[in-house]
Length: 121
Image (cartoon, rainbow, N blue to C red; front, side):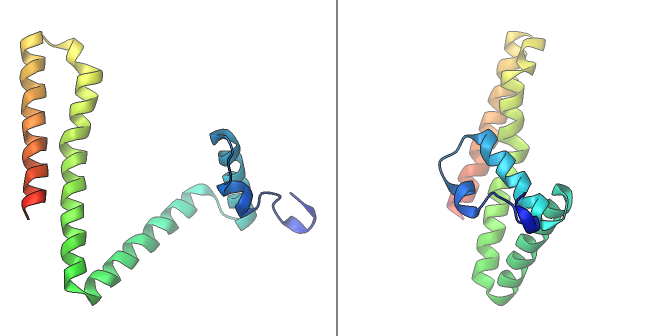
């Protein structure tokens, strides 16, 4: 920290071309200069985003529809595609080839149906 409690890491440094490790250190210094821990900051950011989405959705019904559709699409990805990726990369070795193929096919078809349902709405 520089004298007076000001962080040496400026916004320009954080956004500039730096390695991921340097950006992480810089981000931690910026958080430290705010005087709050990472968990609180994470909760505050999530709360602000959710509150902003809720207020915009209340203000305009069309935006509420878009938020609902995007939420359902990402819900489909989280509930079906992500488990498919985890199963295919890690757990398929624990089952026979035919069972692994069947589980992979079912999850792939379900994910495709969810994405298709999103696109047709």
